[in-house]
Image 1: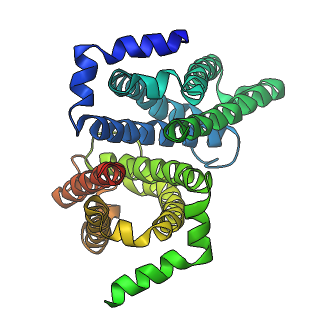
Image 2: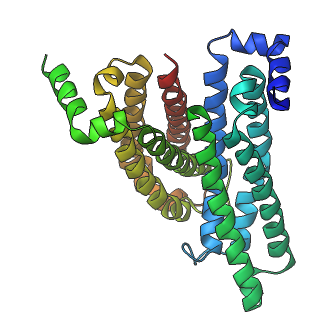
Length: 162
Length: 162
C-alpha cells in the first residue's frame, strides 16, 4: 500500500471525514464555493495577465489594474485552500491518491510564486518604464501564469474522471 | 409528447452520441465550460460590485463596463455552446434534472434583471458614472445579479449530485 493510500485511509477514519462523507450537501456546497472562488481568481488574473501579455486594454495602466486585481487573488486563495481542504478530508482517496490532484497542487504553488515575482517586478518599476528585456520577461511570466491557471482548472476537473 | 420527442431526437444526433460515448470528450467539454463560466461569473461580479459601490471605485461604471462586458459575452457564448453539447449528450436525463431546470430559470432571471437595468437606471448612467453611493436601482440590480449568478454556479454543481 502506498503512503498516500495509508494517509487517506487514516483521514477517512476521522470523525470529521465521516461527518462530511455522511452529509449529502457538504461536498457539492463546498465545490460550488470553490468554483465561485476560482471565478474570482481567474477573472482577476486573466485580465492582468492578458494586459501584460499585450492582448487587451492598452488604455488602462498596468499598475492600476494590478493594484485592483491582485488583492482579490490573495484574499480568495485562502477560500480555495479552505474549501479544498474540506474536500480532501471528506474524500481523501479521491484527491490524495490522484496524480491530477498532485499536478494541480504543484501548479498552484508555481502560479503563486510566479505571481509574487510578477508583483515584485511591477512594484519595482512601472511597466512602461521597463527595459525591453525586462518587459519581455514580464510578458513571458504572465503568459506562463495564465497557462498555469488554465491547466489548474483542467486538472481540477479531471480529478473527478481519473 | 413533443418535447420528449425533440429531446430524444437531439440525444440521437451523431455529435450527441459522440460526446456520450467518448471517454474524454465530455470531461474535456466540461473543462471548457468551467473556464468559460469562471470568466462569465467573475467579470459580471466585478461590474456588480462596482454597481454596489463596493470595489473598483476609481473606475467609472462606463469604463469598467467597457472593459468587462466583451469578456462576459464572449465567455457566455463559449459556456452556452459547451453547455449545449453536454446537454445534448443526455438531453432527456438533464431535462428531468431538477437543479438543471432551476439553473435555466436563474439564467433567464439574470437576463431579465440585466434587461430591466438597461432600460431603467443604465439609461442615465452618464449622470451617476462616478457618483457614490450609486443609485438604489443600480444597487438592486447588482445585488440581484450577484445572487442569480452565484445561484447558477451552485445549481450547476448540483446537477451532478442528484
